[in-house]
Structure formats: C-alpha cells, structure tokens
Image 1 (tube, one colour):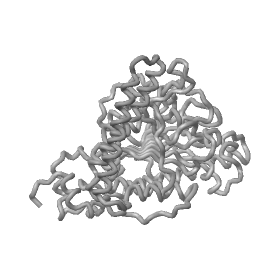
Image 2 (cartoon, one colour):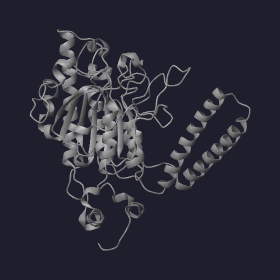
Image 3 (cartoon, rainbow, N blue to C red):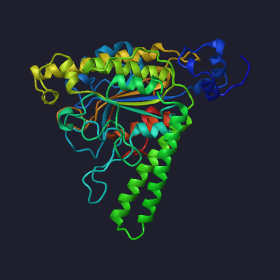
Image 4 (cartoon, rainbow, N blue to C red):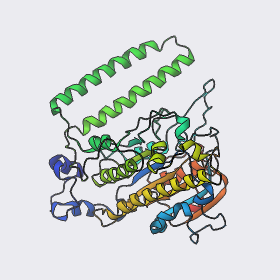
Length: 431
C-alpha cells in the first residue's frame, strides 16, 4: 500500500475496520513506518485504591533498595511482572491532612485551604495534564471511571470527596462512569440518532452556551471580587463544555469501532467489576479510542465480593487478627487483578511489534498508607509509557513530594509542564 493517507483519513473512510488487529495488508505497517521507532502513542492508567494497604506485608523491606529486592507478600501475584514495574517508598502529598481521603488530592497535590475563606480547594489532576499532551488525537481525550458504589459516603469508602480520581483545570470534580456496561456503550455502541439529528442538537447546545456567556459577561460590571471569582469559575465550566462539544463535533462522522470484547453484564460488582473494567481499558487502548484512564476502585463491594464480613472501613483499622488477615486478602486480590491487566496489555501488539504495555504508564496507589496515615503513599508504576527505569524498589527521603513523581512521568510522556501540585522538581534518581 503506497498511497499516503493520514490516520484520521483512514478512520473516516474505514471506521468499521479500526478495531481489527494491526494488519500489514491494509496499510497499518505503512503508518507505523512513517514514524520513528520511539514515536508510538503514550498511554496512561491511574488506579486509586482508597483505604491504602497492609503496610507490614505490602511494602518491600526498606533495606532492599534497587533492583535486588524481595517482592513482598502483598505484591506476590505480580512476580511475573517484576521487571515491568517500579515501587516507591517515601512519597507524600504534604498538604493532605484528611484521614480517609485516599483519592481527593492523590493526583493533584493541592492544598485544601489555598483559597482564603474557603474550606475546600482543589487543582487539576495529573491525568488531565497528561491528557492535554497525549489525548487530543483520540475520540475521548480521557475517561474517568468510578467503582459502582457512588451512593456510599466518602468516609466509608476511603476515597474522600470527588466523583472520580479526576479533577479539571478549575479544580472541579469530573464525573466517572460507574459500570463496565456503561463504559462499553460509551466506547462501542453506535448512536441511535442520525448524523443530521446529532448535528442539529449540537448546534442548539452551542446557541444556548453562546447566550449564557453573553448574559454572564453583562453581569461582570459592578460585582464584588467574591462574585467575580464565582462568575469566572462559572465561565470556566462553560468553556469546558464548549471544549467537549468541539471534540464531539470533530468525531461525529467517524464510526465507533467494532467492540473487540463482548458486552458485559450490567450487575457486576466488586472483583468482577474490576476485572471487566480492566478488560475494557485494554480494549479502548487496542482501538485507540482514548489514551488516558483513571479508575477509582470500588472498596466496600470489593471487600464483600471476597467473602469478607467486615466493612472496608473496619478492615483499614486493622490490628493482628481477623482484620489484618482481611486487609491482606484485599491486597492480594488487588495485586492479582493488576497482574491480569498487565498480562493483557503485554499480550497486545502495536504495529511496530512492541506491546501496549511498553507504551503505557500504569500507576497504582493511594494517598492513604493505612488507617489515618498519610505519609509514604503506596505507589507502583508499571509499563514503559512514563519513561522511567523499571524493575526497581526506590526508598526515597521521607516526605518526598508525590507530585515530583507525577511531574517526572509527565515529562516522560512528552509534557513540557514545569510544575504540578506541590512538586519541587523531577525525581533525579530516575534521570
């Protein structure tokens, strides 16, 4: 195939084929050959586990730093991938002081009290900064996922306030999709309305937004500073909607890919939900529907699916005995599921022969270590997408900013951002 076609042109012309394997005979090899070997798309998955871990059995020995370390009991299911991930100790979000808030500031590193007179403040999350660098060429710049237990109070699921792990440029929560079935339909189900009907609805939405912005600007004169701040926040939300509409318009005439996986059942919970969410993420990467995912893991339903009778909250307050054994069982389940995700990403091939895992950065962790302890956040980074050396256990100076790692990974994914959250620089040990 010698005709030079852009990838986008190919998608528009043959949308029904984009979920097929990378077939040399229909030109995928040609597309890959046009780019240098290191230019495959980067991808990111951030997975947050809420209440943290069993510190006695999840972290490797602090005296075994480097490549020669013994994998801990809680991470044993990941042994076959030991050379494909790196572990960190000593990372902390210094401003976070809220017990049971394992996710709210995990990817942002924000100071809750940074705005005078306000009791809550957040900033953009790591994944959304990454999406601006690597997510623009796909139908969905990023997708936020949420465990199917949104109706529970944040205190009881260990995540804290928020609708997912993701926060937008204004520090506002981004709602997450809370079931594999809904994610399947977002990625692969064909639109029921015709193109003309969808375009008409989009034009109507644009007209409404234009009218709202015009009215809002007329209100600016004579407002107090507090009201101006509120209005600016409101206008930022309008700009976010405009950006989303523009994105949807640009993909409106591109058919969705045919699903490489079967439609999941609608009632999955706990362990089954997590496994299917991981399968759907891999399918989305396989079809290049998005390059950025966050997943706020289910906590209470996960515990129940393992046959444990204790609540997730009580398990997090473990001591030697039944609670600690339950905590260890939960850790093993998360590690087994993570190993399955890495297996799947490793088995999928890119057009240049590399695996999806080679081009994907998978982050797994929590802002909570355990109980109410917020320092030494459990942190695992797998895959080659973040550009850091793998197969290591790094024991860093106590209270090293977790955002230094996020900044390092952002640079590895091609972002030129100078700071993130409370970062003080990149991690020099990874240079």
